[in-house]
Amino acid sequence: MCLAIPARVVRVDGSKAQVDFGEGVLREVNVTLVEAKVGDYVLVHAGYAIQTVDEKEALETLSLWNEILAAGKQ
Image (cartoon, rainbow, N blue to C red; front, side):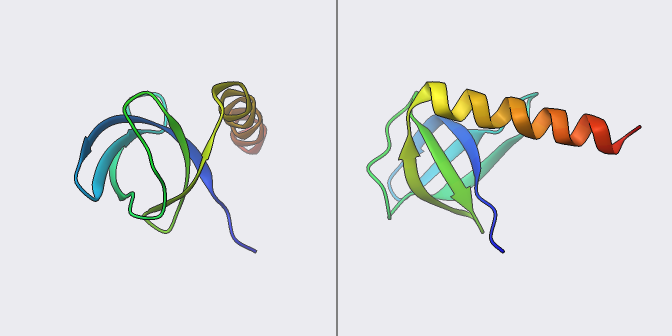
């Protein structure tokens, strides 16, 4: 099973972008597979942005991930 996590694009520099997974978690990913601009949300898998997603869907998915992670800490 593969997992892709939504992240917001904060900077684009050619084929690389810095993305924010939330709570200050910033990473550099490859964006050659998508047309992403600052402010877009992308799904990230294995260091690649594989798809753009709308903000509502991205935030809903991140909220569900946070619930799962919080439940695992109990």
